Image (cartoon, rainbow, N blue to C red; front, side, top):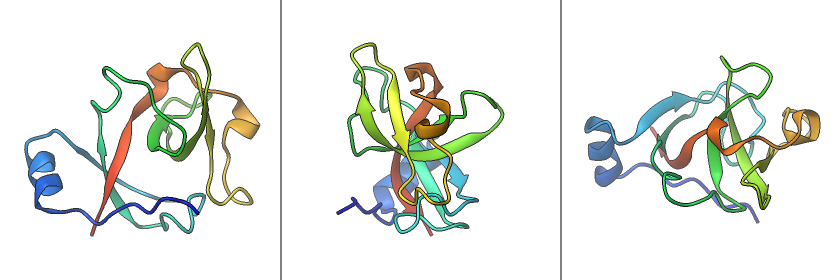
Length: 117
């Protein structure tokens, strides 16, 4: 079963106000049922300053071929060199590492911490 993204709480709200979280709106259905188009999320841009992502994390990353495009995906695998395979929870809709390959750690912007409702 896929891990759910919790609703934001007071701590997450304050971290957002203090600019320790970033806010983003989901625009596609590639992460259904975890996230729906129109959901707003908070993500931690410092989550991977000292550690690598781990399988199961939901992350925000730049598309490797279109750096102006941000993606919300789940980490499937982390390679020894730090590159990550990113997957959509709804693979029939999403474009992910099956299409563009593993992404470098520099393209991962942070870990999704909560849904901002």
